[in-house]
Image (cartoon, rainbow, N blue to C red; front, side, top):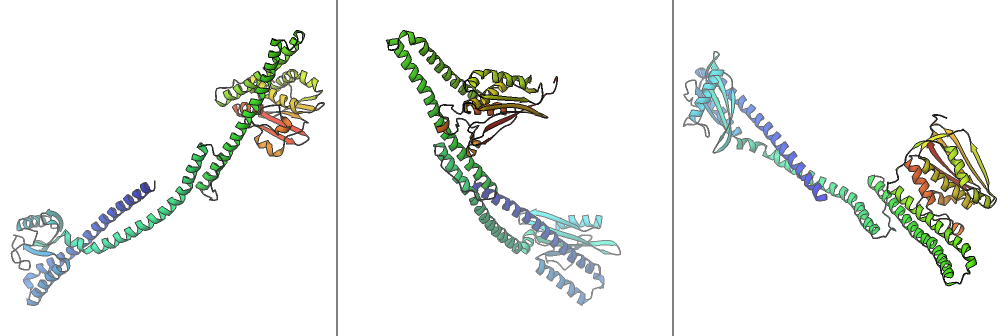
Length: 464
């Protein structure tokens, strides 16, 4: 990853350097040609006054030509309008890299337009630039001044600038690379720790924690990772506890059922007692069937295969039917049941069968944990657009430290106090059914004063 980023940085700096080189090169060439054009115009002016030259003016012109050659490394040629050389250039009538034929061609162009021209040519000796300026007398073009120089001499003028630029870009690349290396190292170090921690979690070691003191996105990711590891650790502990509970729940009735059946088969249990023990075996099979049913129901809900079929129904009537189902157990424990409905009827839009299962599990928990002679309350009230349904009891309550986990799979409250009363699946099913309806459920409890569960459903006032 770091190599890829460094490569991208080098490519970006290289492209930037090329663009700067091209820009500087074009600017320097244009500036040099402007200088040459100015010099050519001055020589053209002197050439136009040639008939009035004295010896001093002639020497000045020759010195001017020499200065231009020295300063710009450029050759100078002056031709009249018929192509004859005026004796201020090279002795052979040409300048290096520019032939007389080429000069005559450019001369004709200048005579026709009366305007200076600039030409770039590519010869075997390399690229070259030529500036051609007309010289005039009485507004008539009498000839042209040629200043010719190679591209190499122009490049030599700005090579020191390019060298300084290259050094600056190199230093910038080194500094940027060092900063990038430091930043990337600070980013990749915690990521590598997370990768190692993920490998440990994959091997079943959930007791791992990543330093999360940073305040940036990496720190947030580390904190989320630690929360995930903690949640997985809790889930693993609950899974093991669940396996232990389910094993106990299944082993105990199976053992007793096997003993009863074996006793009836070998005659240890008298024939007249068979009906009673058959009833015991039947009760145990029903209990195991409920356990397996809860497991299958939870599995279907969590796999996404338990779609809801909403319809309009009276939630109050569903509450009444649920209470009637538990009437035998309520009478057995001599419980007092209080039911209060703020609105009659109270229609909701939900899956009636699923909500019936929710109420059944909540009332079952209340009946299960409340003491003999205790009290259970169920009430509904409307706070549009929702209906709130509450099931409460005055049982022993739930410790505050365990409230955040009460709806987790396999979770059971204080096993010493609730042993044999459940396997922690009922409330998990309740929570997931309410989630399927995109509603909420909450629990409040105070030790010694019982627990209260409240869930919401969409209110449907039609036909109310």
